[in-house]
Length: 91
Image (cartoon, rainbow, N blue to C red; front, side, top):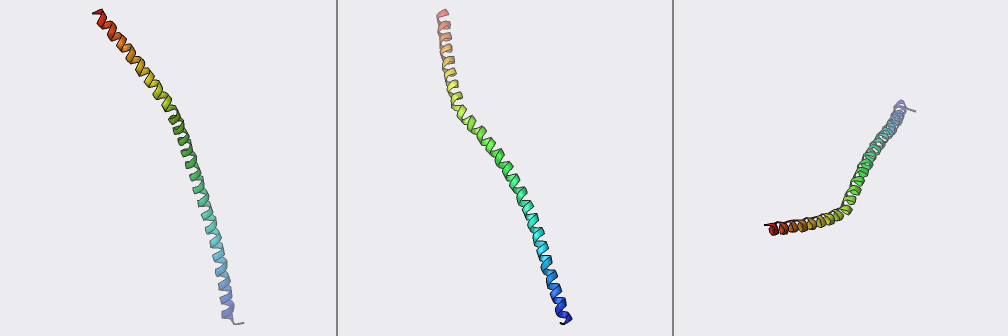
């Protein structure tokens, strides 16, 4: 065999091995980045889920609070009318 063919074969094999090694390293790096991004995404999703639950709890309780405020407002109005009536009778 001619020495130039042997050198070409060795160079080709070395190139293929280098490409395989670089591809594996790149895949490993990409997998690490994806795992990190997935962890960040899951953390953010958990945080948002917690905020949504908090909001839903608030939204469920708000009508109850509004009803209580309405009742208290009505009671205050009744007391004020009674005080006005008493004050007008006293004069």
